[in-house]
Length: 247
Image 1 (cartoon, rainbow, N blue to C red):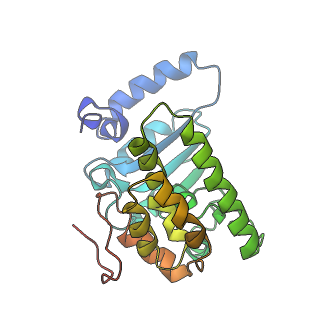
Image 2: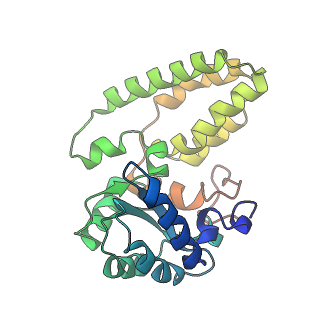
Image 3: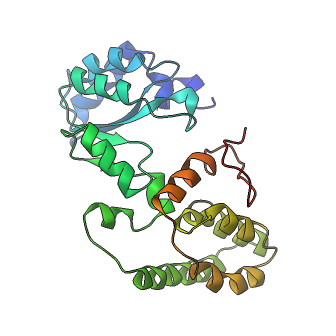
């Protein structure tokens, strides 16, 4: 609200005339290409259909669309019908963004939108750092994945050591990373619960090797973690809890 109430971010979407005024000024002076990332609207999905005719009047390079409305933040399902309507209403190349959390979901969306050839992965890459490689059709053996993830977390420990912060803040940075990356492993909610309860860097370092040796998550487990454990509402299901969205 601190942003959208000022007609900034997706808060500008209900005001296509003002967007037209801004773009007219921008394109009269901008020496480089411009791309736009947007949602379907702020309060309702139909707002984008009033905006796209305005955007069609300008030489925009491409438009990335996340098919939710602003008031949703990241809750609820993506609106694929709304994205389809955008395909029909724009003359610009579109990039799809939203809920690409594993290879299977990417393939499903690719089948629904065969004309889309650019994809913004977002949180899916935080959950699985190898997702882009998998989408390209390249296979990485599990032992190589573990080696790369081990190197990453060792580097993360080294980098946060140099942060001008106390141990608690340093541990918080590490936990923020695992909030997503726990989805890489089977029963990710258990993985994050273990890390979340760490009270010191030393305790975290002690458990890290065992975590990195756990089995990798299946596609179904990754999907469950995405839908139930990271809906950006500040809660995560305790280990063993039934899969349901926490409110």
